[in-house]
Image 1 (spheres, rainbow, N blue to C red):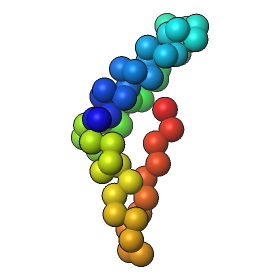
Image 2 (cartoon, rainbow, N blue to C red):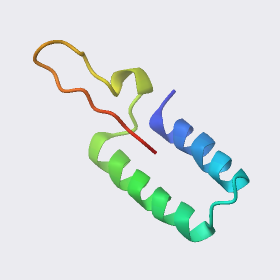
Image 3 (cartoon, helix red, strand yellow):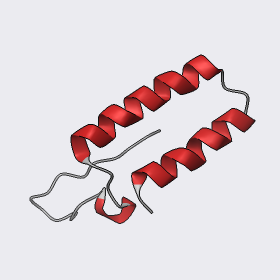
Image 4 (cartoon, helix red, strand yellow):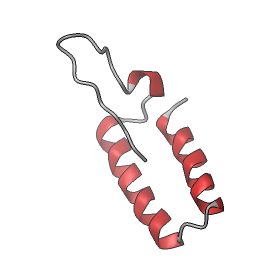
Length: 61
């Protein structure tokens, strides 16, 4: 699943939980900046190769 699909699911969940439109707008802006920088990655590729010389990237939305 690509990041943009995960974002749609996350945003829908937060709307149901009652997050304010302003909060969701701020989250969306941060998400767009992330995708602009990294690309719309497929989630298995987000962690990269967890080998000795690699950096693991963790996303918390």
